[in-house]
Length: 83
Image 1 (cartoon, one colour):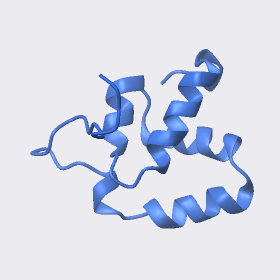
Image 2 (spheres, rainbow, N blue to C red):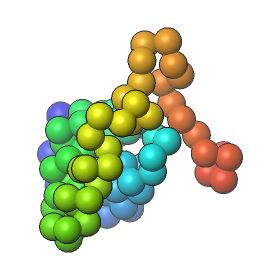
Image 3 (tube, rainbow, N blue to C red):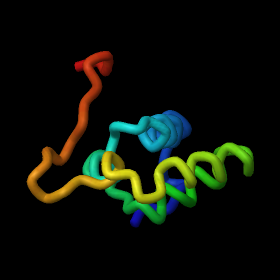
Image 4 (cartoon, one colour):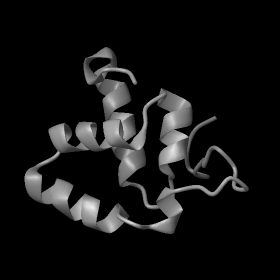
């Protein structure tokens, strides 16, 4: 697991953006940045206001789209995402 301070601010912003998106699974973040869900939660907690973090955790807890099954693709890519 990479420590949070090893990421640039742009990378942290992208992790937060991906975590906030409902359709991007934690496995895609792990594939792209090499961090597990627990580290994503730590980053979200440090980068967001407490109320926003609480709302995000309630929203993603148990959500099927945030956790891939083994048969699904490893990486989700939005149609609006560049190259």
